[in-house]
Image (cartoon, rainbow, N blue to C red; front, side, top):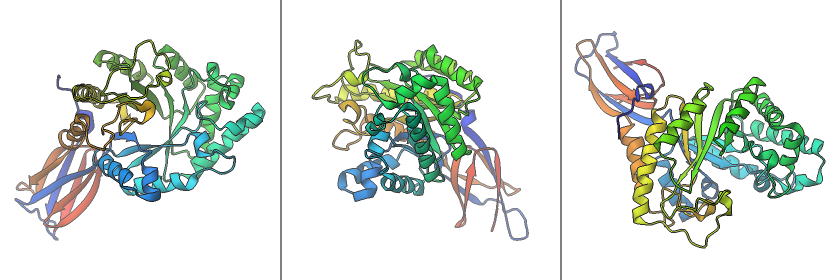
Length: 402
């Protein structure tokens, strides 16, 4: 695999060590240890919810393994599950999970605020005007209620298919037909932005065709405050391959917005047949992982991550399933069902915390200076037991007085 330019992922960290009178100290050892990435290496974080509520052995094992790699997690706000009874949302569980994640240095995203699937059934008793009112009230409640804990949201999900979705009737498809795609997107984005002007607000879709490009173009023309473009990449029918990954990046980069790969899956078992159009239609009793396919999964994930991390507009990559047997029962996780790590887990841990990680020692020169190239992120700098915590997202100079 060819070397890729990662200069945009690094900064120049400079240090000056002096005594109390400001005189340089020569030959002093400086420990530079990274503690977090600026880049968002993410994964579905649904298991944080049972962990914070009961701390059982299974969820504890998953959370501890999860935290060794990831600094970014997606929590579920599917309306029908979050608020199965009108007026009784599961606020406490989600808030407790989100606060715990933040305490561990993990960025949190809520997914999603508006979606036709997994919608609340009780909305169906209302007319379209009332449905729209209820949708905006939900956005107000969640974005305001979680502000400062969750400041990143998939505002609306899978809008390309939304108004023509015909598997079952639902309230959101109804209002999307009424307002049109761009009209609905503009309405919900403006509401979310009003509730938290500093939030990162994503549009998200699995459709990477020109239809999604046209939709985004129309939204930007209409002044929709989109912070980032979300691209789903569920690859149950086989890896896209480097050529397609590059092609998708090229097409969506021209908008000039950050790109988030929001839902990435590559499986370590038999591939889903190509004739399946809706992945949800593939229902099997057993979908095992195998050693041979686990090696394939690790190779494919590594190639895809290297391509995405090397692209300057990609800010986040989220793997959807942390453990096998989640969505569709697929072997799409980094862990097997018994919580043992697959080759993909070990590979990604080496990438994120060894190859793309800065942990070094420097020695000051005759002017008390030392410098290094470092990956953007958070650091603990130690000299003679004196610690400084810094965040390096651009070239930075740190003075340490002993």
